[in-house]
Amino acid sequence: EACAPSTDAGTATATIAGFAFSPATITAKVGDVVSWTNNDSAPHTATVKSDATCTTEDLANGASGGIVFNTAGSYDYFCKIHPSMTGKVEVS
Image 1 (cartoon, rainbow, N blue to C red):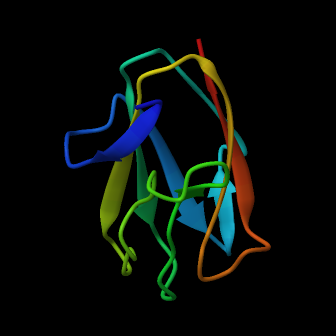
Image 2: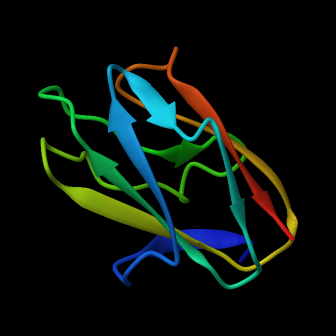
């Protein structure tokens, strides 16, 4: 699989605040777990557009979730709850 949900600690980290992902583009290496922490009061997800199985659970305020990336490439992702929220993971 190119990517999959992961409960491991993130080797690359990002935050969700103000209904936005930060940084907008996350740089990771093959095998890295990207972890998002939600600092908003509203719940959010990080979901890969090309493969909806690569998603965090709904993250409540203060919660974190991760996705492991096993294949190099560029992965656009979004929040399933708020689809206008988008970001990118660049895996090399």
